[in-house]
Length: 238
Image (cartoon, rainbow, N blue to C red; front, side, top):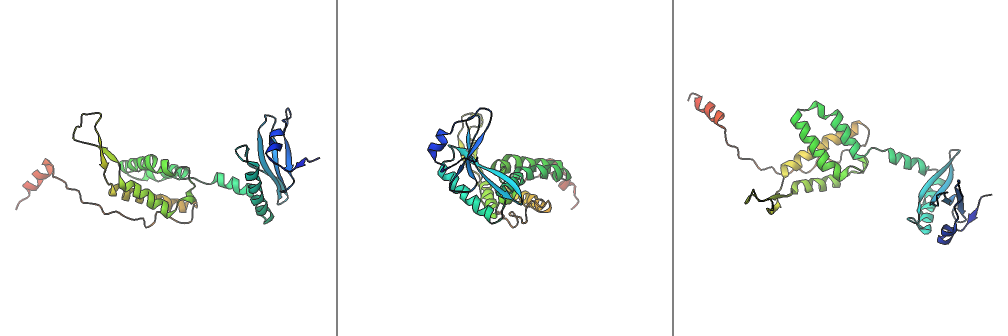
């Protein structure tokens, strides 16, 4: 016989584990909502339901990290979705299997970068592994927005504090202020735009959040000719 009680904190505390088996105590308020007591003594909240003729069980969370009140509210939300014909467990499994930014980076490096020049590929790999992956790696590919791209490129363009050159041999030298890096931000934006374009081809998302990113003004760099270049210019007849 199914055991039903109005679940509360006392019921969870008093529930005695049974050696070698787990059992459920179902709530009287929300259909299918239960506390599962495992042989180890762990207690978790679950919801049982049927979808398309299949019996399903979804874990809500572990007690006491989830209070009874919070778990019951979550069970009510899930119950409403179930009554509307949704399968929350399938949605959860799909979410877990959805590609994340680190997966996109891995595929981009493996499939696209071998087509590029070695130095370019190495620079892009470093950019993605050291900058993009730490910031977005665990996010879903579909979660990244235009605002995320804009904020990230703002951060890249800001640069970082650099060691002072006043005392280059002093290991305790102070750091200078931030040195803006607009060129780096623009190159990063170009890589993100290409990567998300490929993600669209892979059917990982429907749009490109890096399309039309804000380009920074790049200051022209002063360059001095080397001895060989000067010699070639001098050898040109007037």
